[in-house]
Image (cartoon, rainbow, N blue to C red; front, side, top):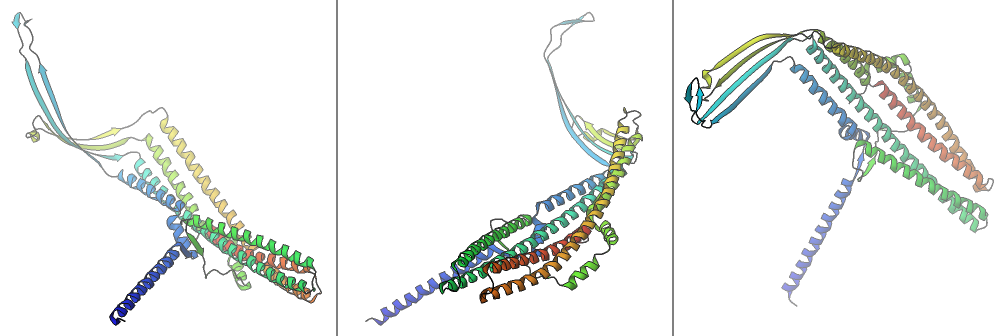
Length: 465
């Protein structure tokens, strides 16, 4: 035996083992990291922030804001003088062939061939400023400013709308998830019951008909679970599309701050908080960005009337110019021209075009006023409906909680009676179906109540993003 050789072999084995272990650890970390990147759990606030960043409606609304702000800048530019500069070079070439002898004034004259080139260099700077244009400049600036504010308010309402849609979709996902858990628990309970019935039938304590009936019920419970899981996945897909995330990735949604459990104290507190319809309507009119947008649109329409009426007034402008011209570039400054003056232009008759523009602007103003009044009515209706939905949801929570307690006791009693042989399997199945239905009703009522509260907050429009 060679101790040195044996030691080298052992060292090589240790090195290979360490390399394999290192490679396995690296591969495991890579798999964990890849899985973590593919699956992410979003809270409600994270989903909202993602939607405000990626939702296409929000992006389009922001683009409209930037476009409206550019119009304001252009309207402000009308208060500034217009400045233009020009520079040019022209070359004229005259090439005339020799002519034959001609009699001019009794004398015979002949013209030799000629060739001439003339260059013309020129440069000019013009400055003009509108002194008065019938207040069209002021009206256009006011109209652009009001339109920009209206667009900003519309964008704010778009953000509120997207947030409410995300909240609604997020709560719907949580609701569907809870319904899946109810179906899973019901299926487990049904399978355990099937095992007990099968064992009791084996020893002759229960008829074979109960086994078949329970098997049928378990199959129906499995189908209900599949349907619930499918509804849950579709709700997640709707939410993923709304927040603008990648549909190919796996998403989980969980938020510990959202609890479907609602106690009577919270129900009474909410009812007292949102009891005054008139106050809530006034708060909505004071905070709703879409209503403020209609008011700014009305202001823009008023400015449009002033701009249209400006056609009846003259336009007064001042101008000045400075130019250089010569046939040689080196002597360009030897020929200077300076001009200035004031111009008045008054369109005395334009075939009633100004009148048509004015009447159209007045009609737009009236329509904008009608839209503003209609928005007030719509907000009142929305507040009323939101209050009715919240009250119905509150009553639904109270009723569902009572129904759940009753169904749990009913199912417990039916199971005890069946186990003691005093009840039938049909009674137990009926009680179990009642419990599942009560659990689903309680979950739906709890989340519908939360959604109703969020809807009322959205209708009032006080939350900003």
